[in-house]
Every structure is written in C-alpha cells, then in structure tokens.
Length: 152
Image (cartoon, rainbow, N blue to C red; front, side, top):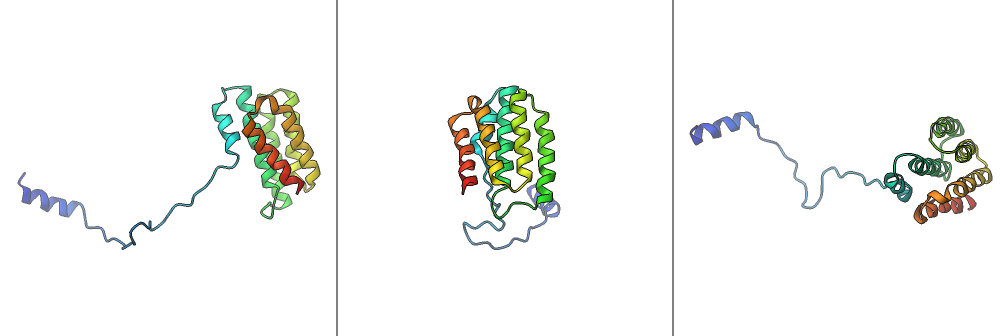
C-alpha cells in the first residue's frame, strides 16, 4: 500500500483528539490514595495456609475493622452498627475455627453494636488472648493499638 494511501486511511480511522492543556507534572484527575487498614493482619491472612490459621487471621482482621468502625466521630448510627454486627456475627459463625475462638468473635460482634467502650475493650481483649498463638508481633500490635484507642 502506498504511503499516501496509508496516511489517508489513518486520518479517517483515527480522528484527532482534542486535548486539555495540563501543566507539566500534574495529572488532570489524580486517583485518591487509599491505605489498607490493619496491613499486618491482612498480610498475615494472605501468608497463612488455607484452613484454620487463615480463618483466624481473617477473623482478627474483621474484628479489628468492627472495633475501628465503632470508634471516633465517623462511627455509624446505632441502627447501622446493629445491622453490621448481625452480619459479622453470621460471618464469624461460618469460620472454620474452634468453638473457643468462634465465641469470642461473636461476642465482639455483639459488643460492636452498642456504645459501651468497656464491653468492646473486654471483647477485644478476649479475642487477642484466644488468638495470640496464631498472630505475629505486628498483627498483635495492631489489635493492642485498638485497645489503647478504646481506653482514650
């Protein structure tokens, strides 16, 4: 195909793009940077073999998210916390973990529905105690950091 014919076809098939002038180094629509909460717990769950070890790590991650969601000014209203706790309780029931671990997870879910920080701290302390043999130091530190926030 002659070069002139090819250039003519390209012009018809690929229309020109009208661009927006953007200063150098500035992206017109930067993506928001999201950080994963409780990175150590998530990493532990990712590294753990399938089965009980991973299920315990995932349960601890869910427990941490429940506690963190009940703290601070951004905590959802009580109706939303109750619905979230009911869903978490059924999710915890489906974990392949011993009953001695499943019950503390369920109690933490129940405590996250209310506004009693002492009950939530007690439930989290129990979860830490029954899962500490399965957690690494960084994961345990993340859960203990939540206990400190509850004590504030």
